[in-house]
Length: 134
Image (cartoon, rainbow, N blue to C red; front, side, top):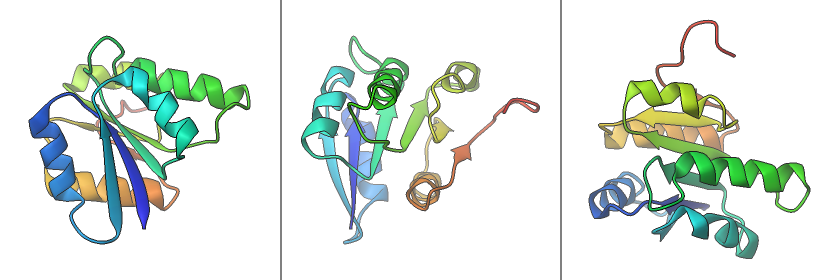
């Protein structure tokens, strides 16, 4: 069973992700701020972290960079990250975070499941990545 941590402050987004993950193969924990993510990863390392771009005073980009900084310092294990972006223009920012994947809203249950399955299998999922960007 895969443990998924979601950071989002919008009830509709939490409900959409929870619905996409319905079934016995996933458990979903949700936090409402980006600042809570590191503590949750320290306490109980999830198999995947999903970060909404806009969450409170520490959004998904900052939370992902924080996780990667702690990982590079040996203070946290590596955890795959899926970013949920608001618009295609946000792909440029997402590409600076070393996140394994991102999806651009609006979301669908199919795309959420596809991305989660890819990341849990050790792959990536980068929607709308600019050609030539590695």
